[in-house]
Image: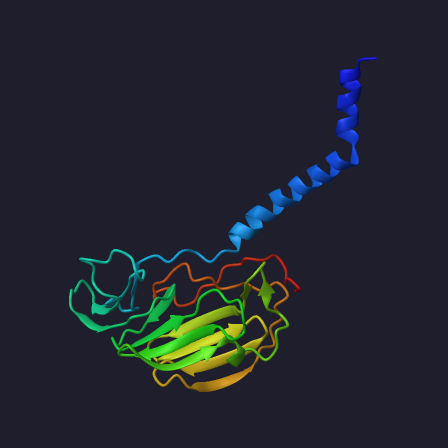
Length: 220
């Protein structure tokens, strides 16, 4: 008998080999998932108001911004800011009045994280945490280290209103000028196959947008 063939066969079928192959397969499956769970890197961008008269400039903090317009609100194509900010956000919604703005929180990892905040002339009016908007954690959609909470949003620019529906079935309408609740309640809509909003389009001209990210609700 060819001992080289026999040795190869024994190695291939050994418990150690099966363990190593299983480990490699698990790592192969987990690496893309872990990479996909990382928040996106900060990028500079501009966001237009619905009437396209104003644009908000957002620069990456600490980046080489020499020669660039400072982060803040401008009349479109102007080099002179109406007001500036010192923070960074992945997404904002710009009002057509040239005064008000909604800053959206980063990808959430805790209920204490910022959901959104209202600003007037660059000054904070009111900030809301995710825990202020959800009555239960049931229905939140989890990834490896983060979760999604927003099902749908609509920005009524003309009437200065923001409406949000959470994946937990909570509905809220707020004033974008005062930052106060106008009404709150529970939706009758079942969200077992809910869509999750992802702010890829930063312009307020797309005031209602959701993108399905999960085929079904994920339990933690």
